[in-house]
Image (cartoon, rainbow, N blue to C red; front, side, top):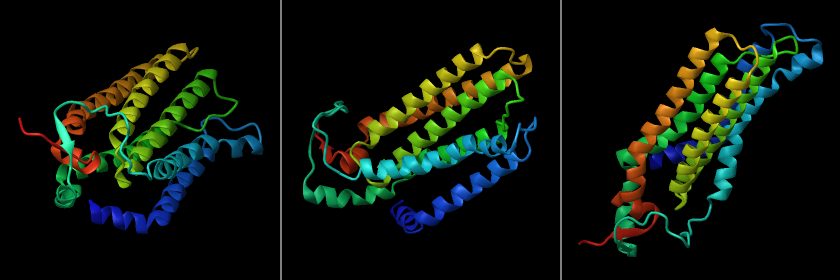
Length: 246
């Protein structure tokens, strides 16, 4: 994980540029092929906006997270209170550095990062460009799913930045991202329920998508929340403490 992180940091600008160009290219294709034609050229250009928001969201989340989690100072209030712990010695901290290369840490951080392209891919493949000639329900759904995708990508990219910075607040950031994700699915459900005239054939796949997103969050929480709380390795790496033997 350390080598991958170093490689990514060295190529950070190129990776971000490639991401923005890729999503912007897809956005352009959608904008020039709307279901209904735009009213004028200005509206045609405006069709790009929701997709550009999705392109920018993880970049802003990552940049914000890198600044927010730059400090590795331990928080004054401990929320992970299960177990009996003591402060780690410098020797223990030195020996524990190999824990950054553990399979569990790699799986967790890579999974957080992959949330971003997967969420964006779902959005780009399911949400068309919406013009003033489209019905109101189409505008409501596009707005709801754009907010969902942008905020989820922002939150998970920020969590990835916390992991890259090895911040003691990483666990709190990840739990906050999970809660935001759950709230976003609830928001979409409310918006879909209030959308006037939405075709019945769209309700089943949208309900399935919301259920799948909630299921993914629930699975992630059930797997990783115990790891965040009681893992000896993670407590040593992020909280700088070791378990006291009973």
